[in-house]
Length: 381
Image (cartoon, rainbow, N blue to C red; front, top):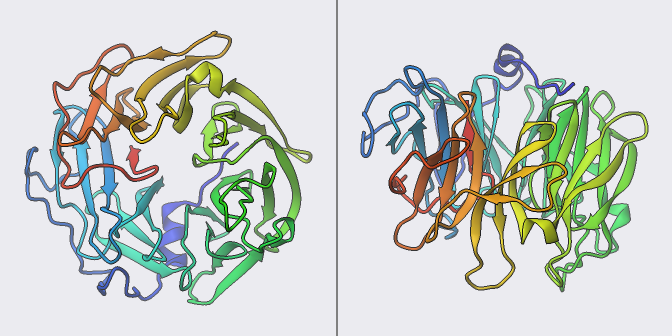
């Protein structure tokens, strides 16, 4: 079964001094989130009375510019902007949620992971991943953070109580020494890491994507295996029953699929649904159960590809599109109460929307402070 460290262990293990990020320092004990109440109730309570809470991050991709974090109440259908302290969210953030905390991976020029309390959004800890590391994701095991990096040789590991950064070197399979590791997930006390293996000059995949399985007791690679397609692009996501999903796409021809990885002594991966059936490629995957998934799907007709919210059921010859004309859905999170919260990046009308299993619940996109264009920028709990 999937395993994540408990909040208490994290609070002890990550009691590190806050480091500068995005141009600011923070006091992890005293920094408090501010909520301006715009588009929402203005309550300091991050959790809805009877619904779920979604955290949404976004940046403008301008080096050094501040990003934003807002929350969405699935019961009241309201957004509260300005939830995170200054400097906690960079210009290119990614979000994960473990236990009672949200983990903001500040990519590009941020080069850090910031841990926020998921109720107050105070900074619990903030750790650097190394200059020019360009972190992409974060996983937890044995009280350590495992951070796949684009600008390095594999996975940065930050140990409890230390600012020292170790590297799990996965570069042997990529001639340029940068395997472009893009996601990590803790499964059965191991860390699964997906890498793209791109050519540094052309950004074309050298071959099939590769997954490495790291033993966190030794921080060494136990095994590695190929995916059946090129270029894993979504973050690894858990699937009911203990498997893992990741979406892939080769931008040269649009080929790829949602791969389903079966962990174990000899892990394997197979295509669950092809990009041909999807009518594009997945930018986010959220499984409701072992055979049903909600997907954000993008077309490959650039510069303005169609972007939709789709329902996939295993065995079906096609997907069911739920989003409406004029909506551009780039991200989706499945809430514990069954609500689907999505990011709509429609120009001049961007924000978050909410869907039930069959129809939209909101009447318009609700603004969060910036267009919600972050990769994996939504988490709901």
